[in-house]
Amino acid sequence: MTGCAITRCMDYESSSIRNALQEIIANTDFPCVEGKTVLLKPNVLSDNPPEKAITTHPAVVYEIGMLIKEKGAARIIIGDSPGMQTGPFRPKLSGIIDVADKLGAELADFRDNPRIHEKDGFRMPMAAVLDDADIVISIAKFKTHQLMYATGAVKNMFGLIPGLNKSPMHLKARTPESFARLLMAVFAESHTDYAFIDAVEGMEGPGPANGIRKHIGLLMGSANAYALDKAEAAIMGYSSVPLISEAERIHPGITDCSYPLLRPEEIAIDSFMRIPEGKKSTLRSLFLPNVLGFFGIQHDTRPYPHFDDSLCRRCLKCAEVCPAKALELRHGRIHIDKHRCIHCFCCHEMCPFDAIKIK
Ligand code: SF4
Ligand code: SF4
Image 1 (cartoon, protein in one colour):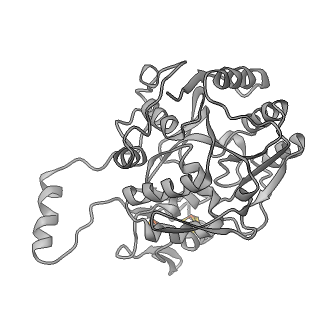
Image 2 (cartoon, helix red, strand yellow):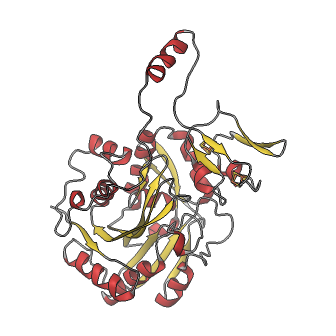
Image 3 (cartoon, helix red, strand yellow):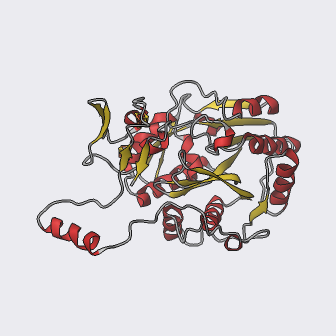
């Protein structure tokens, strides 16, 4: 059975990361990289400093790159495509450019001639560099996510869809369950061989961009990315998350694994600030939709984005990324058309000024 290795790593010192990685690799099915071209896919949701815990820490990417070099990889490529990518991929603040320089790795721009992949009813433009890679490694970040509750190794590969091409994909996958199926299709087409999660510093609360940094003190790795994400969700204290529920429903046994080091239930964090798993039922919430439905009126109880005028800088990034074209500037304020909103929360994810709350 595939192993899912979880071990302590209390800081981003080179020796701490290296010891943890060696323990993880020794206890899991790490692929042979000798003579191969290896694509490393960190999470660079947006180019932010490592201290914000939005992106995979550069020290983790570097040490993984060094291990792969020592194991004889012929070529290393590092790439991602932030949701708002409009220019060349030059992730300076997050430290990824420096890592690529130090490793002698190539930096891939996923917007260069993307290829169309078709899988399970989805038509997806994906990074052409996948064709060059013999081995693909996801290096995700331990973070919450407004729509999917947690973002991990499988969802990290959604970044293979270049920049703003991601937004229209949400229109084809409007619920957490259908979005989970889209993520599964992207992941299958990525042919990911191995996955790590950087959980030294993670994010709780309203992730994946505007949450609160939290020290977790772990590094995790497995050849089974679904098992790894299930372990991450359990450590966060979720009973289930949409991606794993949907994956297990469609492919029973997909998350089966052994835990050769730490077990997730032993290290679950009681105080972790999770995304609320749906609103509690009240008499009003149970009966109001039925009563309104009887009169042909739709009543949506899902949360919406709310805009804080005191924090909003009117940059319009939210309107640009909104797949449903539900946002516009009216009389100097962001206005939302709730009939159009599909609750994807891309606006919240991309707001650089934390001016959007989901409630
Ligand atoms: S992205 Fe944030 S700051 Fe920019 S307009 Fe939208 S709410 Fe305002
Ligand atoms: S307003 Fe925000 S949550 Fe609603 S569809 Fe647009 S991006 Fe998604």
